[in-house]
Image (cartoon, rainbow, N blue to C red; front, side, top):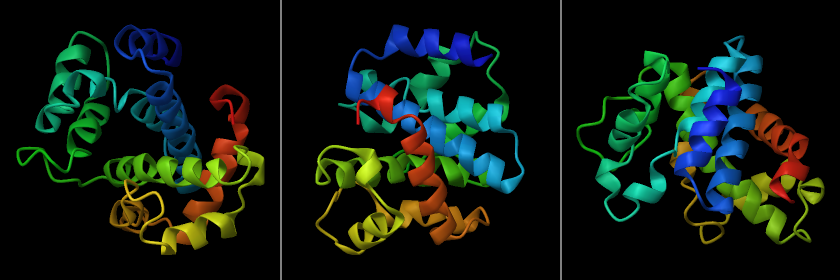
Length: 184
């Protein structure tokens, strides 16, 4: 599946702008992470873009998140490692496979990081351009700030051999790179 087809299928299943923007942000961070780690940027970007394709359908039954995504994508030519990362990123599903690859861990980290960075932008005049690496690092330490952005999941970047400091840097840059698309 190429990027154009992936976005088309996402738009068929995702109606909310906030969720779509989260998926774009996750894609941008995944691409930047892949580049930094010498991995396949297209493959990792595809993973980030598709990872929450079923969220609107499963938000009331979170255990099914990822499972329904596999059903949606089963007739698409989505690579197996992308499907595995999508299903394994749901920590609420006891049957999800254990995260094993760098892509698996980075999807979890990128998914959580988007929320933290967006929350930082909201208190910085709703502009990503006002968010610095240090802004994110300070916010990370504040337990009540962006509570839904799980810090332990962000730290999975280190399991994928990307330091936290570098992950913050490339995540902020990646999201700034698509700030117009995100409306921030």
